[in-house]
Length: 289
Image 1 (cartoon, one colour):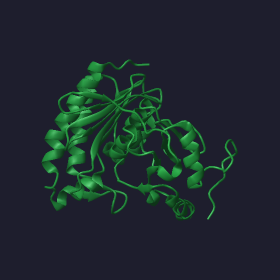
Image 2: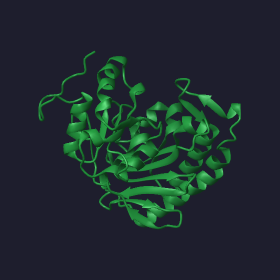
Image 3: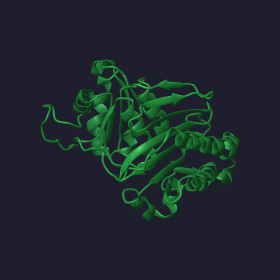
Image 4: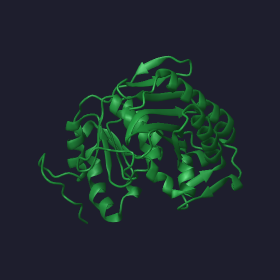
């Protein structure tokens, strides 16, 4: 496995800060109509900030890690075949230049930048930057998960402690699911204290890793949304798997990814949502309308 040092992480942080300052922050609340475009649907947006930040980060990280395969969200939109290189590359660097683009384009201060490093279809480092507050959360495999303040001060991150389902809060993105799946899950959401959706994986992973929420269920498995955050969540002590219990890999593009504070709570949440059978250890029960 390619070793990643603390010095490497500091270098990537510097590149992310530079891209934020040059390409992202100057455009927040200042986007003109021609600088925002729809991709696959009317609310799947790309902005000039996404394109500029990805270009700047891709060039900088390719220089820092010679020979690495750089895979950016917007580059994959233009060349979908790039997605297949993640599991095969000796070192892949996965970039989400502006995570939460819809929020960003609509003036909501809930967006971030994400970079994940992958070796052999396994994340080895992940960094999430929050340009408006100038801080990071990050992890290196085996090194724990950390919040890094603007002045460099570090604080260890830990997932939420055990608590009953009725006291749990989490994120479920219902629009990602088929109508018949929504019909199964939606009636179960009142069992939890609060369920919401921030339209931004960068913030959802932050809330998970610092113990502010208990779970996230996501049915969109684009690697730029999960490579960095999944590792940070894992290093913060969390448990995650593709339902009904398959380990997550960056090359996966389909399935429902459930993240929780522990394996026990993962199973309890899965059963409460209606995504796992009522008896622990049983076979997966397909969703029915």
